[in-house]
Structures are given as structure tokens and as C-alpha cells.
Length: 321
Ligand code: AVJ
Image (cartoon, rainbow, N blue to C red):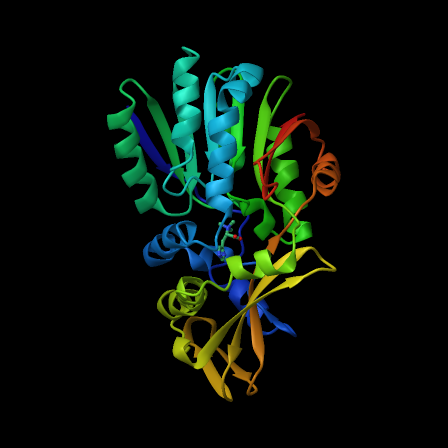
């Protein structure tokens, strides 16, 4: 059984207001509007990123899940698996398999910004897991999460892929508190976190030699053009990504190769870029076990277990409230 609903986000800024705020800030900063990465092409480019030799995150996280899913399911004994930012749900199968082995009823509630990715993965999962009940939500994290978290019985909420790293610290806190308020005793929150490591490994993951990440980055400008009537020339911007050690995060930027004037019709906004001026497009925070424990404790979570892959590249943190 598949049911898919669209989540309205009443609390969310007017369409494009985050883009106005970002393009009029100094330095220009669109990193608070990551949903502009994920149109259909953006989701596809991200899938390609996960297969790049330099992008270790997805493989490392999957290897942890393969080793630990049975243990995680045994600890959390969920009646429902809720996934925030499910994408193509590739790694979710490992958890669904463990749930099935444990003999539990398999109920799955994914939330994703891409309605297309949601429908496609729901159809495939329904074929692979006969009897699964899927209640999907198309929407972003600013929406009414309580509807997604409602669920039946004990819940295991998963937030994989290191996506929590994309929030600014203030937005992250607000989001985590919202999740926390939706959970009760016995519920679990499983979060994938990219870990602090040497600069070369981190920077290579965001500067792949095939140039897919650069295309993913420029696609944000294409989406702003389409959705807000912008006239960015994406080819006039160069991809930059580096590790900001002080803030423990990768930053992606787009740097104007020459002087530019950009018009965004729907916002009635004209912005200028000096030659070489950049706009920050994404932050991707990197954690240690200690910083993860601290950040989540501020929102009322207790670290119950911590899992990493053999090489210590990626972490899976299991929290209770
Ligand atoms: C899916 C948000 C976790 O931050 O590593 C990949 C997105 N950006 N390459 C990340 C991304 C550039 C990815 N997350």
C-alpha cells in the first residue's frame, strides 16, 4: 500500500525570499537554501556523486549499515521506520531487510523534497517488499514534521547521508528540537555524520576529477533561473570547495569568472558580482563523536550508540530522547 501526501510549509519564507536574503548578504550566501540543489537533475547528479571514487561517504555509511542494522533494529524494535530526506532510498533497504528478518510489520514513512524521487522509490520498494505499508511525504524540513513523525508504535527515525551537516548551526538546532518534540520514550533517532579527517580526503570528495560536483553546484543557479526568473549564466561561475577547519565544515562556493550583473525577475532584484567574487552555496559540517554528542544534547538527545566504518570515515549515531 502506498500513500503519498504533499506537506505544506506554512512557516516557510515566501518563495525565493531565502534567495533574496542570500544574494544581498555579504559575502553572498545561498547555503541556507539547499533545496535549490534538488530538482530532478540535481537529485540525479547527487546520485552520480555517491558513486564517485572520491566521495567515500555513501559507501562508508552503507558498510556500517550492513554490519549494524540487525543490532540497531534489535535495540530500537520499531513499529515504523521514518526516513527524513530519503532520496532514492538505496541504503534504506539494508534497514528494511533487518526489519523483515526481525519479523516486524514493515511500515515505512519517507520524507523527501523531490516528489518524483519519492514516487519512484516507493513503487520499487512496494515491489521488493510485498506487504510493506508506505506513507510518503513530499516536502522539506521546514514543514509540519509532526505529521511525518506521528507514526504508529515505537519509531525509528533515520536521517542518513550526512545531510544534517548542511544546516547552519541555528537552523540545525531548530530542526533537531522539532524532531525531538515529535519523539517520545523508546523512540530512536539514527543519524549519519561525516567525520573530521585529513583535509586532502575531505577536499577531494567535493572536487571530483570528473567534475560532477561542479555541475551539481552550478545546477543551483539553473534552478534559481527557472523558478525565480533569474538570468545567471552558470558557465560564468567556477566551482570552489575547501575545508574550513575552524568551523569544521566543507564550504562550496561559485566564483564569478568576470564582472556580472544578474537579474532575478520574480524577486525584482538585480545583483552585481565583481570579478572573482563568490557566493557560498553549501556548507557540509564534519563531526567527531564528541561534537556530535554535544550538538544533539543541546536539542535534548542522548547518544546511545556510536558506529563507524573500519577506516573511521563516517559515523552513525543512535540517539534516544
Ligand atoms: C547529501 C548533503 C550530505 O554535503 O556531502 C555532495 C551533498 N554536496 N557533494 C554533502 C553534496 C556536494 C551532500 N549531502
